[in-house]
Amino acid sequence: LSQNKVENHTTTSESTQTLESTALDSTVLGVKTLRKIPNLAFGVGEKLEYSVNYGFINAGNAVMEIDAKIDIRGHTCYRIISTAKSNGFFSKIYGVNDRVMSFIDTEGIYSIWFEKHLREGKFKSDKWVKFLQDQNLAVTNKNDTIRVPEYVQDVLSAMYYIRTQPLEVGKSFFVDNH
Image (cartoon, rainbow, N blue to C red):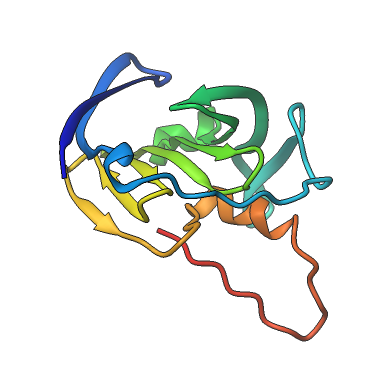
């Protein structure tokens, strides 16, 4: 298999960073026909806002929104952004400023790119995963290439994928996620 250097640019609330990884060239393996799923459940402009409470005291807020459609490697994707922030009072005790993004193919409702930027107290973590769905691979910012199940989801895309499925009361529904 040939290897290509793939460069992805993304913007966080703190800075612009260039993320690089080595990825397998999908043209070597041939073309896989990717699924299409009808989606009447959500779209650009959806915004869910939550109040985060510690007992009866407000500690902050959380927001999940689909703010745009973005092209990533030839896939039109929903950009889903989830943020959680502590308010001024709780930030003095334990500040939280988390940002998680998922880029979901609009036709097949599967993950193409995932980012997680956590800022919780003194803890900091940055993670990204590039999903090569046509090859059943996930490539991480730690240069790990992992074989994954077909149409694997990330934690955010899984919630949106489930919304497109016919669910039945009392029956389990399983979703492969990474």
